Length: 79
Image (cartoon, rainbow, N blue to C red; front, top):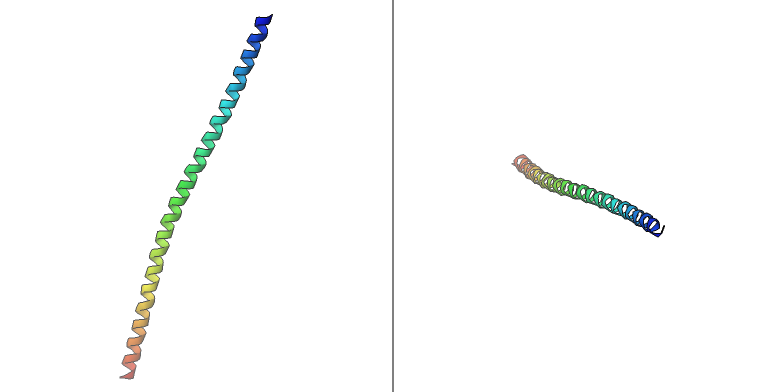
């Protein structure tokens, strides 16, 4: 009788342990997926940021060129 109870208890403990480890693995996988998603998102944002910088630089260059061309026109009109 005593052995049966011990056996049941051992079996129950083993079952609980398996459940806990299963949950831990599941949580770990979720965290890992979340981290990967965040990394991918950060990379995309950094790439977008670089593109935005390029666009801003181009806009500034265009603006400067327009200013120069206006000055030229004004100078030509004065002459």
